[in-house]
Length: 379
Image (cartoon, rainbow, N blue to C red; front, side, top):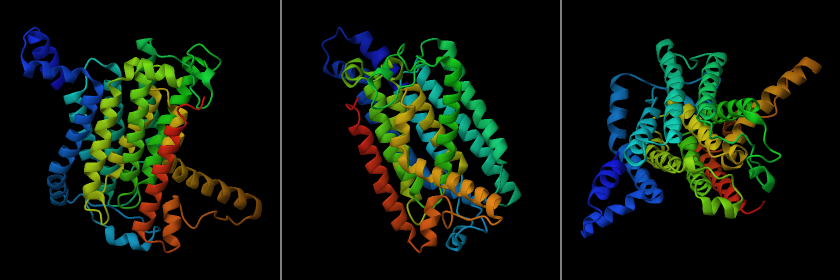
């Protein structure tokens, strides 16, 4: 909106005039400039409206429900305002609409996918509030709704006809060629999109269990994705780094920057001890947004490295369930690989302080982000 007002309307109309202020508006054509201000805008929106949202959630008695089987230290958090993810989603959407080129189909795809994942999380959170317990939608219901969103993202790519159906694999130069050996076609790619979007949204959801954990890791991961998105959308950098060039993804850089800024703003209120929790409306939306950006920029496999902490948390749950079922079937008594999952709860059961777990996982997230960026030229 700001781009069209100040660049398309004002600058292009008066660009022949030798006016300093008009010439200065030329900067709005650069995606790097708009990304920086989208980040700042989302941050400021989160900071300004965060306190007001917390007051409203308290007034409406929207409090967190705690699992009885969870760590006993979490019982003191019962009743803390939740569903704060609406602040994250709102900040990202408003900031993106303000600073991105609204003609970008990829920007709209990311926005709508994020809103749809948020809607699934909102229904889940609302059902928890209505039932006054920690279980909302069933796992099957959530997966079905998420799968429908994934199909929708695939349908947009299929109908636009500009998407290259090759799987870009890190370290393998030939896979960046749209018609190379990694071409799998649109229908197999639908399966990949489903795995990526469902995996990322649920991985963030599983990580959201300690004050400040999921949102701080999100900030690091989205910052790295902002870099990857910009590089893959720029022809010079994509050619130099052997990335699949996605010029349509340029405006996604603005979206990623907005998500990073909104994450910092929400962390202000979610830092230990948390004044508000994001709820499923936030965690599913964040994970869905990350997965959508990874698909649109063809960084699906790089997402495993960028979001390494999320992957570890999800794997801990999968391993725990698999080992328990296997040992119960063979010995009659199920054994657990960890004291409790997701993994952050395992360390809580070993008497690690919550803040120590959060900071150590944050260090891991930074290492994963740096490692992913360091691989750009390793093809």
